[in-house]
Image 1 (cartoon, rainbow over the protein chains, first blue to last red):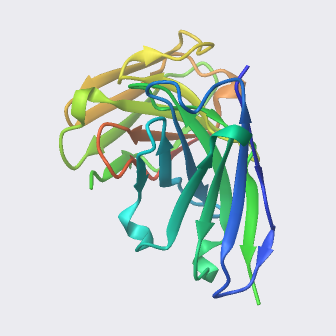
Image 2 (cartoon, each protein chain N blue to C red; image 1 turned 30 degrees about the vertical axis):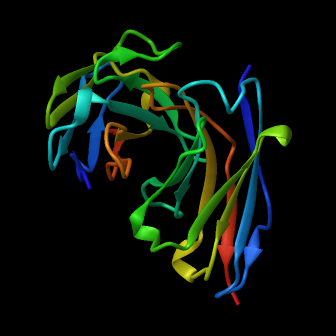
Length: 119
Length: 108
């Protein structure tokens, strides 16, 4: 059974760096084709893909984030960590950790964690 | 970047009626890697359809996907009470991965 869970702060101040951890189970992040990614959703708005860490070490990011995003993978801990710098009010959103298999979309999602940017 | 435009923004229907949701891409979606998700309030999205027309595990057969290239459709043959939700299309064939703006299916 594949599960993913997000953890981290619920409140950050403008200009601060957000660090969220995705801890997963039920699969190996080194299995061919597997990707663990992040998607966010501002309150009442649509989904936005942020980035993904692939089984082979490849990382892909949404260019809209202007190089603010870094993903790191810890295979031994079954974790993928999101780091988003220079947080702004518009970054307030529910952040989801997601899994995709080879040639497939995101089938498994974490429960999501709401991060609010406020001074 | 492939922009996905969903229409209509809101669909007001009664249980038992047929729902037709549209997703139009700004350029052809590679391999027809187009998925549909259902999202209910306070929940993570749930995958319904992938590869434009394949049902994900557990998706009822009243949900069907069709289309290719730039025009895709999600059809719900007969709306059940639990189908009233927001639906998103998503292309995963090219980077950056993108989502549509969503269609809300509400009870008339």
